[in-house]
Image (cartoon, rainbow, N blue to C red; front, side, top):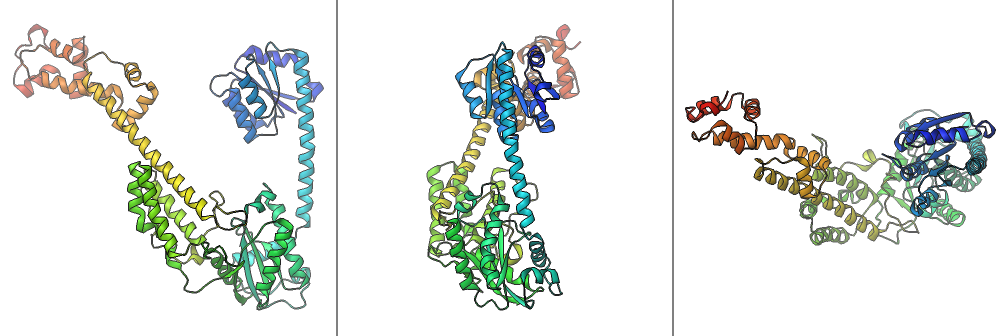
Length: 558
């Protein structure tokens, strides 16, 4: 086993090394880190079973490290060793799974007891993890992986000629290989939330259960086969042998069986009969397009849908392009009421059309992501926003539904239009807030620039500016450079040099007086800076631009 000691004080790390009976605990590798940031790198590299950490450290503190470890390496058991008996620190340690909280100075007996408890917890959880791994291996062995692979390869390679492999015919117990098939499909991304909640983080087991239910019905009737489509990780595909005339009735039976077993509902898209294997992909695409073009505003639609030739394919962007300019103005205004009105008009046009599809939602999301990037200035140079007509055939262009941006569904698995509208409002409100915040930042920087211009001749420091505007020096320095394209000191110098050029036109002023009036107490230093900015001395500038060096005398350029 491995252990990691995290503390910014070397003597504390050494004390822990001396107080723990490492060999008796089976710990053979002990490493050290001086702060939380260094600890995260070592945890990722070493994956230690036991971690000791202080709570108050520079950089990343113990609370942040505990939070990080709970997400990135939850198997590690963490023992907190702190000099602070603080309720909030103890609470954070418990919240993120700390095994024990030991106060400094360290009591050896308490420390070794905490390690015993941590190792026992780790061993218990490791046994559970091993059991889970063994179970997954057994399930994988039971799964007819090669059947999934075969049928997925048929769909992944459209137009593939040839007949059925004998091994597939034997496994499916087919008297005669089917010359035609009819495809149906369902998307897990478009399924009821209860389905995914039933198998949190274990899609393999979920598909195992789903295909078992489907194939109990299909194989008993020798009517077809269901499998997880390897090309689309969130899709369940069913192939019905022959013309598939009884496919709609079988799909209803399968849906009812899934509803009873899993308390979750599916909608299936259904294609037309096609030659197998050469045209199986075409039937699958028809099923997929049918599902994606289903009118989700029709809450009473059936559970089996087929593609409607010549259907509403021109609505893929939900008429967003017709309202985009008004919505953009509303977003940029920063006015919530104006944004609500602009979006309200768009929502009203969707509702008036009476049609909304998953295809439209997907195409709108893609278009919106690119449009938002342009609004916020995040778009890459040369980026092209997708054609607002959205006319390209869905069968050719749609990708797998993005599970990271799920379409809102209710408990029954139907599209939740009100929840979707609210999510759009919230998302655009965030964009509006971001733009407003950026405008405010620009305003503050321009106020700082005006202040510097008014006080350039004074001995002003970046800390003086920070104190006046209640901002950190680092923030002002970074934002000023971004907005003004030069740092603060160069900006002040530029103002001084511009003012010096003007004053040099007054022949009655000596160079030393010009220097003093623009904020330089040392005439020689002023001359050096002036020459750096103008490539000539103040005297030469006066002679060249104003025709003389009168009034310079002994106080002039030397």
